[in-house]
Image (cartoon, rainbow, N blue to C red; front, top):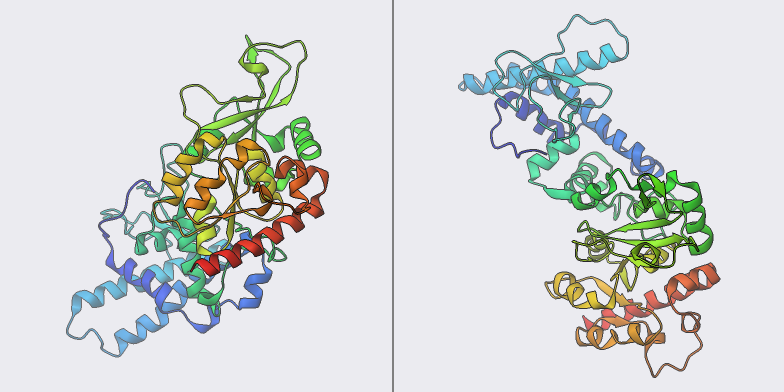
Length: 437
C-alpha cells in the first residue's frame, strides 16, 4: 500500500467491516474439508465471498440493535450504525446487480478512506472488495487505478501487517475467522496432495526481486522453450520450480545483433543476481560473456532464496544451505527449502544477516563435496548447526551424496536416490536440533 490509513473518515463503514470479521454468522463459515480440498486460488475466493456475505448479513443484527433501543442515549453512535446499514444494503444491491437482478437501490456510499462529502465508493461484486472512484488508496506508482480494498487489505490495515508478508499474515487471519477450526490449520497455503512437499503455496517476492524481474532485457524462462528445455533436461529443474524461483533468461547482443549465448538469470532477494551460462557459442572464447558465471558489475552478490527462511522457522522445517542457486533449486525441486550462498565467500554474510541475529531455523550445511565446500564445516560447527555427515573428512560411509560433487549433480543422476538422501539428512538434522534444545 502507498500509505497506512491513520484516519478513517466514515466510522459507520469501520463498524460494519469489523462486524464483518468479528460477528461471523454460522452460514458463512467454510467447512475445513471443503477449504483444504480447494486450490489456493479458490481458497482466496472463498474467504472473500464469506466476508462479502457476512457484510450483507450483519444489517439484520444492526437493525435489531437499533430497534431494541441500544442507542437511545447516544444519537451519534446510532447514526454511525444507520450508515453501516446503508453500506450493507449497497453491497447487497451491487451483488444483485452483478447477478443481473434488477435493483433500484444505489450502490454508492461515502468512502471511508478519504473525506468524502459526495458518495464515491462502491462494492465490486466481481472482485469482492471496496472500490473508490476518487482516491487511489491501494495503488502504487505503476498501477494506481482499478484496484479494490478487499478482505486482505482491510485485515492488513486493522492488524498492522506490513511489507511482503502482509498478504500471508492477512490470509492466515482470515482463515482463522471464516474457516471451521481455521485457527488450527497448520499451513493453509499448502495445495491438496502436497502435504509432503514442504512448500508454502505463497511466499512473496521481495520488492527488489520484482524490480529485476520487470527489466525489459530479462525474459521469464517459461516463455523461452529452448532455455527451459535445457534447464529441465540438463539440470533436472522443472517448470514449476523455475517459476517459483522466478528464473529468467538473457541474451547478450550488440547493436541488436545476438551473440549466440543464453544465460539463466537467478535473482537474489536483495535484487542482485547471477547469470549462469546456458548456451555456449564456441566462436566466443574470451570476454565476460563467455564465462560460466557472471555477476553483474555494480552490485554485490547476495544470498539466493532467503525469503523462505521465515516459512521454515514458522512451520518447523529444515532449510538446506547450498553453494549455488542451482543446488538450492535442486532441493526445492524435491520439496525442501534451501538457500544458495552463491559463493563460499558469502558465508560470513549469511551468518551475520540470517543466523547470528536470532534465527531459530534448522539449517543444514549441504555445500559441495569438495575442499571449498568442506571448508565451511568449521563455521557451522561453531554455531551448533547441523552438517550433512558425508561432508566430514572422517566420513567412511557409502551414501549417495558422497559419490557426487553437489546436490544438482545428484539430482540429474538419480532423482529418487537424491530424494531419499535428503529425507535421511532431514531426519538426522531434526534429531540433532531436538537434542540441542
